Length: 143
Length: 96
Image (cartoon, chains in turn cyan, yellow):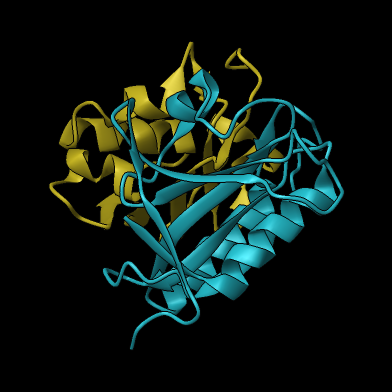
């Protein structure tokens, strides 16, 4: 199960809506082993594409260096699909490289840049196997 | 010559769980061969058809090796090499 606070949830949705029709991407880092998504980090989609995302290689390096220095790990890796459902594609599955992360997918296909609900779903992707999990949104992460 | 190589989570199965290992080599290519000798299977996860895999990033002293000669990038004692898988995906069907 993914437990995420409302502000972080809203930030992910806002990013996805803002970048629509291109895919948006980022991570939520948290202390190693804590499973707490605490630090929202919006990333630039270097592919700038409606059907593909990729973190810029220099930004990726900086991000991992920062997380390493803070004893953090990527608790959530998120991206949006802008014309299809919020379910991992073959590409998402093939490239998933963080077996410990919650892979969050947001679909903006219904309302695009506008107000309105989005699909927000979370998965584990390990060795090519996808397992959907429940998402619980809380006001604040428990202490 | 000792070069520290930082290994990402997904490849630590090849290093017995170690986050960083030491290897030798005057170029990235030689370094990867040396890694393979001690951690069999690792090379195939880094290289495909004689080149770095498209979705694997390797950095030498904070610099993406694609900008400093790729597999031919020169290494010296004390350099730090970091391997990071690309964070990528998307609704597009094909793997580029």
